[in-house]
Image 1 (spheres, rainbow, N blue to C red):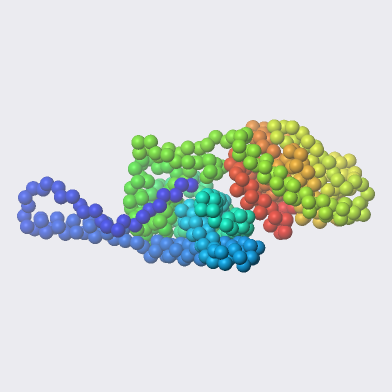
Image 2 (image 1 turned 180 degrees about the horizontal axis):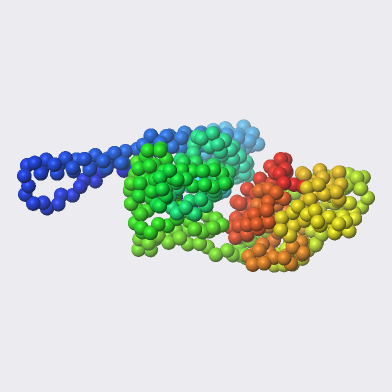
Length: 526
């Protein structure tokens, strides 16, 4: 969805004088009265409503909290890095340059804070907007220290190394953690009805139903739909979706007035209306009433990073970047895979003897289970897992096919009799998948990607489902942090295709973080 900010006009443009015929004093009085009435109505329309002022007040309060937290983190981290530098250098360094204890952290803190402000990391448009907020914080931090590195090299200031080695990674990590904490607080507040945009959805019935259903599934809870605006709906009608029923409160022509009366601060245009000038005139009518006019895009499963806007002679064009499955971005992804795999295999090597002993004591058979899976471009490979079933599990499968509870071509049983006691625990905690980091190191898999399918599953693919094989399968992915085995086949395919076409390094990092949470509180793992 595209958001257009609607600002409150601080003044009312005067009505231009038009040539009129001479008229009687009574006509002049009536004309002056009508003009005054029109000006008063226009001024009233542009006056900020209590609902809009409430929303802006909440945004200012939340922004001040972010400013306070960011500033505290930056000051503490930069001061700590400078203090450690002085402790390592000793008293002679402080005696030679007593201002170094203030100059280094002050300069770093000012540059860092300025970059966070310049990148608009606290703008309402990025708050709760997926990975955008985290990405902006990371970019601002990197650019700030890039400028500092250049300045310190030119000025030959001592202590740069400590700021880059300590302040940059530690400070960025803490900033992201605190932003995550504030976001969770914000979502909790939204569930209670605070910090939420009261929205009216405008358009045709089918489009309105689709938009409302999508918003109700959104975990961010950014919008609270209070009504719909239909052109041909009779009085007292409603729009029904699985989540509930929403009243029709206006027509597209009267939605601005309805927003003013109901205290709605956002209008969502769900479908393109016949009147080409409708959106423009609606934005004028909403001045002083709503903060956002949101245009719902018909582009399904296209993420924000692939969408850009440009103007050609006043014509707004929406550009959608075609997915690419090679190049520098994929080289960066491979570098991230290698880094994560190398780091992860160290603790995995330490716990493997313990898990291996438990597996062997629980049931006879090998420690590892090898299974043919299909990877990038249809290439098959042997995927490694800790064994969680009896050694005869493959031979017992045909007798259980009639009890299949899996979605589509997948075979799943909530209470599979072949799973051992230790295997059930490993599956619930996703520990059985730890050996797959060896597959990542070999290049067969990625840390994040679509679910690795069996050859028998790929044989049943048709149409767009083959696009799942355009990138390497992953140990984790959107499917794992969104319900795993509880997902339907269609939901699993949709999540995988969405990831294949819209992935980014920041998205991968967020999925890795969410996977760690899912391992602690497993859902759909059996």
